[in-house]
Length: 423
Image 1 (cartoon, rainbow, N blue to C red):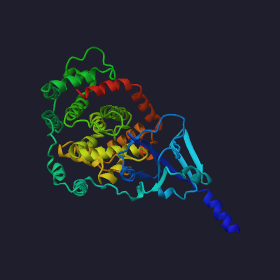
Image 2: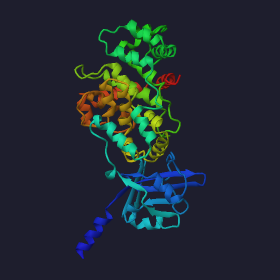
Image 3: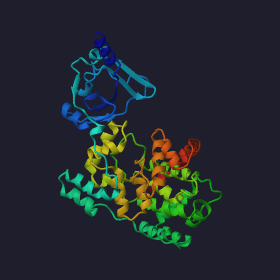
Image 4: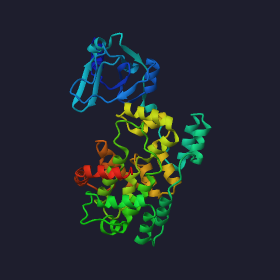
């Protein structure tokens, strides 16, 4: 009797964390409920419902995130069927706890359906640890799509325009230890649009330069410096290579604002680092500017797959993007993006900084940039920055917060600067 009672008490204290996602089409709304440590399989929902449902954001109200299962079609992952208690932590200010004796009452209706609608993150493969194996992994993954044309796009970069001439010249200058301001000005001035962007950048209220910036030389000498202008011009010219996808994840910020904001965070953090581990300001800035370049590469090489990926990312905002990417594509945007950047001969430190930004224990070339970028991504996603990352940069949380606040005070200026990327 006592043993049975203890078992019942133990069962009653088991709490399963669950997630709710709302989806809709022209017929109306449905909701999906699945374990917090799983990825919602949007395709499974489509197969069950025979509808082309798209994720929609949880409404920003104080109402329950759980819609009435007696009036809204509800699809529940079957692993939750015999759960004693469910805990929904959709938003920090709205936590719902449903005890076991109420579950049957809530979900027992013709509108409720228990099915396999999610994939455990423990079953999702991980990307290669070494970027030297990235191309092999991507080719193997693309072979799953059974499309020779898709494989050709990756192997031969068909339909991907070459690196702009201005970028090639800047990269060549970057490897020359004796390069001069005069040479950089000549390269930038050969592209009137690029020249105007650099001057506008230096004239931005973000930098607060006194007087009028009249030339690229002015921008270099009076405001930005040689290193930053060289890397900024490289990022600006590369920004013209691939178009911003129109069917990207809706919960993401505007692509170029996110790029400029991250670049500015990288710049602010750089200024707080000890000299012995401090990267050049220009390289840090360019790493931030290109941190999401992989999305542009995926959308260019795999446009139809990118559209599907975008919907999965919208439905699984609780998971790191690389987990969703691995399940769908079997490679990550960091792998694809840095593969292309290496193909264009960008410095290894920048490529490694982007490629390994989600690898906490990475210690190779560019580890400082990788750690800085990881911290920036945490700040941008309202995630906790680990003590391990701060220790790697010999930085205190107070110093980091000051850099973060410094950038946040200039958000309006950064939005204006982001518009320059789209000229």
